[in-house]
Length: 286
Image 1 (cartoon, rainbow, N blue to C red):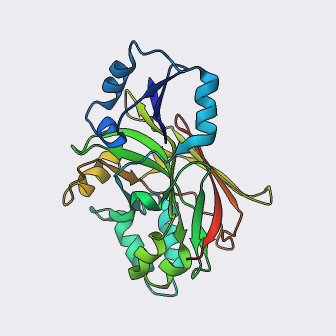
Image 2 (image 1 turned 135 degrees about the vertical axis):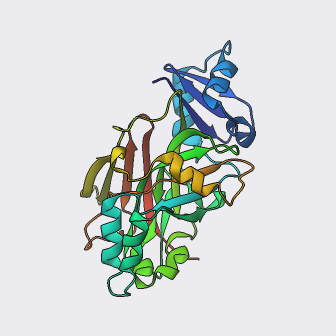
């Protein structure tokens, strides 16, 4: 599998291909939103003079942004068995547990709006937990980039931050549990392969508090119940996305029920072929 990685900085786009970097002066939305993105980018950088690796890496270390322009971020829920179990556990008191069991086996998946671009944090930036929540967790997710034509063109790492206490109180509170300032992490890049990401791709997450590991686990994406294209087909049935769209595909890496995020925790998510997304956690106080 050949891979191109597109990084967004405030100065330009950096394209990484075959251990070299190329600077591209282009608008993010118009550059990435196209069918056949891999072939387009490969042709675009052909003949360009590479940026010295030391300069490119310095730029990425100090000026890296989330790989998003005008795109919306959506998310899928209960796509892994462990996620189904966790959602049922948190909703036992409210009596909403049966909804998660039903959607796991239903034809129609759970899809929900997650974030506008200004609520997205990139690699090395802060993510928020809600001040009115008592139980908060990160949710590491393989995230699809889908063109306006409905084709899956690339992948990134997503962190679907979630208030389990709010969602568990009542399933109708899902938007408040999921959508708030700096509620989503994306990065570090948009990975564009010449073929679909392989099913043995592994997602890993570790959580640190005062540099002490609190949680660590990993899972292959092959454990997903639904296919990526199935999720995309349902998402695009009733919505148009003129600039393309990001879709988080769900998680099954769920910390034990006794764990909740705290200020200054560090969440590290890695996905094979893409890289690593690291964010510090703080409480949102507006």
